[in-house]
Image (cartoon, rainbow, N blue to C red; front, side, top):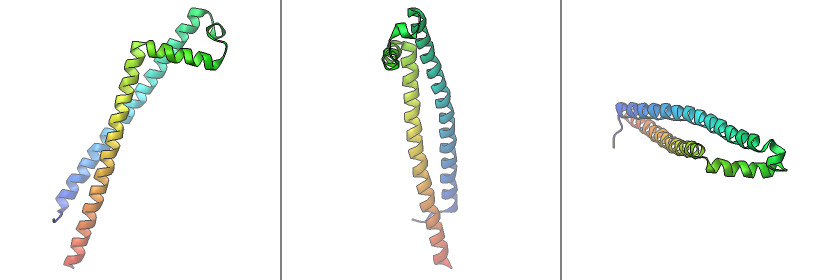
Amino acid sequence: MQITYEQALQVAEELKTAKLQAAELSSAISLEQHELAVNKAKIERGLIRKVGGEKQLAPTVEDRERIFTVACDADDEYKRRWRNLHDKNLVLSRSKIEISTLEEKLRIMLEALRSERHQQD
């Protein structure tokens, strides 16, 4: 199979597109992580206020963390945001695999082009 310069440029363009998509996903994940943390803090603060203080909620930090975890799991908004974050992380992981594949494909194509050039010389 003969590799052309144009084919290598096409793969390079696909790689650029994949990297831009990964950057956008990373930004969206960062925002989602922040929103999830804010949502969690609101849930925790609501529980603490409801019982009149952290020590009234539970005697130890570990006990409070367990209570907060269960409370977050019971909150529909928190679960929705968590699932959304999880889904975005999965898409980002797939995107990184695609980037690696395109990088390897481009490397192979460039090596083939170099090899063909040396054979012609």
